[in-house]
Length: 372
Image 1 (cartoon, rainbow, N blue to C red):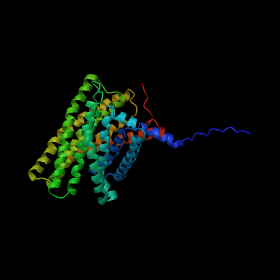
Image 2: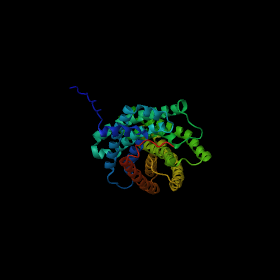
Image 3: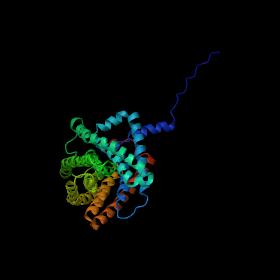
Image 4: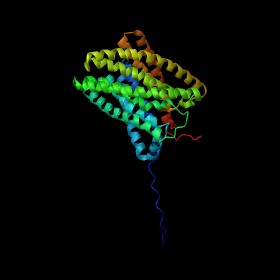
């Protein structure tokens, strides 16, 4: 009696695997902004004129988020290499690779400012060096590679300038902030002076690149009108180089007396105030403009997107900038300014964090973008 061979049923992959890999496909480099926005809560809180409890926990959360994202992004490149390459070739996505550098550096700053209280200085200092080395290398590469791609490979439409363009060139400015924190951990003499002046060089390259890009962005706003609703929060990115540069010059002035000749050290101290005060004034003006545009966009139906994390780190740099000016001028007005901006920062972080968690739970944030 003949029997008919039955075809073997196809082995189906586990449900979890089916869901996990497609979820990573649309995980872009912009997600590192959430690490930056969390780390700055700890970094900025450490410099306030009063004690803020729980900063060590916030820093530990930022470190954990960085590790998880690095693993997830590795999976993205492994399983969705075509999409990863498409991100690099997309002029609206590629600049977010600057966030990868700044995520490393922001967590590194927190390692020294608050992390040492949690894990001890013997672990915090080596961790900061690793994060500084990796973050600075990535930042310097991104500061050159992303503009190169925009010139040589990207199809950039006229009038499409965006504050997002600032992200890769701001990364060296964050290195210029972490560098001074590491200066005291080097032997006195050539090593300290080299790191100090190297940090000043990164401050300069970032500042001059910002001065090239910012007029183009403002010209686009004037001649083409407001940004699309979901991109409106990126206007706050302009605060990043303003607040971070003010923070950097103040941090550099803090360690200059032990790293360089007294004449230059005194000049750096004076420069921190003469540069920082006018730039902070401009930052406050831009903050008012960006807030007005955000309120306008919200009234017109702006929904949540990952661009809302632009409300966090840039404002945080203004907090740390005001804290530095308070140290070097002794003015209580800067203390009060830092407290007010920190309250705004924490509010923005809570809102962005809540919507991000909700978007992850319901799957909307990692879903494929809707084609219009």
